[in-house]
Image (cartoon, rainbow, N blue to C red):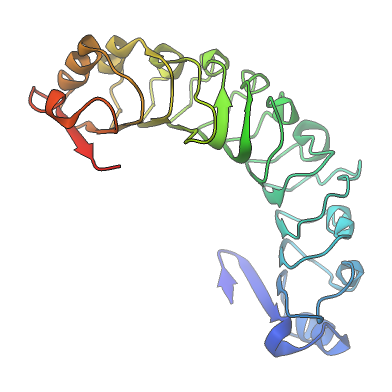
Length: 286
């Protein structure tokens, strides 16, 4: 299977059988440089020592319950790494100098700047953090996707990640949006804290007013401020506000936006209060 410039050996233990010398020969003889390893009951290796036998490995995707997956962090040439293993073992102090994409479940030792200096994309499932210290000063990072555990915290740590273009957080309530203000490349922000997650305390559109901003989704914020700044964003295409209390003046600002901006208001206020005006303010049952 070809994915971009990766040639991927897909090994599903349920149908291909346990990992074996035959699998290693298939990888080497086939000129592969990537591996996708998927679980099968009782057929997955106890660890990833098998990676030592796979020369030129540039992409690795492991989706299998495995307590010891640390060998994946020893492969210097990896450019993309996905570990959906559930392991909570600490990420070792080794450096993966060319890793660009990382997806994993939360665990101790995720320190982007120190261990993945060229990382561009990170996704963390079951994330337990209460700030973004793990990405502090990550110069190459452009996309951050965090799946929280209904906790409350801050965005502190992102303010000096100058390459950030996309931030998505789910089930994570932020105290305020001010760490996003210095980020001039932001194109997409989704802060989604649906109940029973606590609500965001305050989100200011002035903190999201990067000149290239295109899409803003906010769910469950106690307060949203600075609606007037939205009309100054030339590339804005979509606003979605979910279960956020809005004032009459906020609604007027939304209705005054250009027709190119798709606007969805889900939940309060009542749909009858947001119809009409120059812009398009729709209500979606939710």
